[in-house]
Length: 443
Image (tube, rainbow, N blue to C red):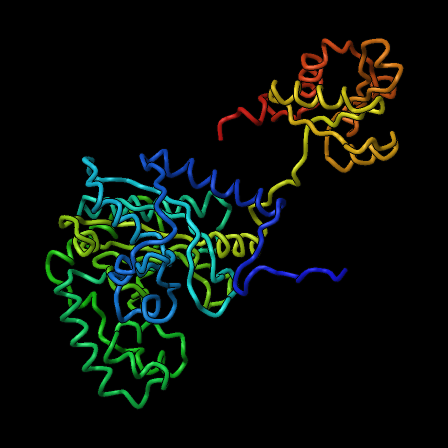
């Protein structure tokens, strides 16, 4: 009989196995704890939406023109897999009209883009992000940027830079695009050939090009911050004032325009200097005051950011931060009497909050002790014929927490296992210099 076909994860996707997934869990918990302290609630939206939701991102963007996974479903509806998080949040706002201002949301989502897989960016990648809808206050921009800054700092990242720009009001942007298009048209021959077509369709993206010829040709291009209306200039200065007050260093970057058309006013990006310059962004966002209206809702200002998990963890690896210990259990039950004791003890211990595991398949004592050592458990609970007959359990210290040979192994009554094991684990747990349990000490 021939073997069946061999399958692998699709190109541009990957499996996140348990050891690495534990790191993801900790990252998400770090993000959620920080964000929820600022009053943001978790929102889940569908993985796919009507294609029109994402077309509102801007017909001239690569995301819409070339990168979306869109298809016709069995009901004849044109739908698309989510390429980013903001559009679905604003669609949810337009649909449900929450009676709270601002509506403060965070999300965790896979995102799909059909593009060449890159370091930290896959065809299915994963994002955490926040959105705050309902207020035009520039202090809300400051709050969102500060949350991004605190999140990266909480992971231990230090070699990141906050880049900041303003796109002004929609009217400012239209006027600037006309000015920039004319300026670029006069220098068309100096641009990289791959950027020339964008002069007509999306001239601001020419400024964002990473191609050397284009960057040289646009070094002295007009800056939108020199052409802001009075209201936009006040918004810009208020945000900068807030960042300075919070002691968040910021670099003004006139080339920062990003790839989506819905932004106005504040635009920001945190980049890492330990990553390749073409893929250095670890978090980015901005203000988008017209997107809810474009999706059928009332005029509603909004501001937010998204951050790719894979890219952030690459930066953590490069800086040598945010390690996660190998997963382990507290107790491993070794049972050579048929398995009943291991079955019952592991469930009993877990019900009291102790992480417990066991071996299966009636393995030998030697094999089970090897499994206990590999598990990372602090203690092994051993049940052999002698223990079973006497209603007892032998407890063996696997990690040398107590170096006295006579205390490396002890016998306890079967009906006292949960109580005694909790006591032994508490005694073995390291404490801070102050004597406080590090699990409960304030961070």
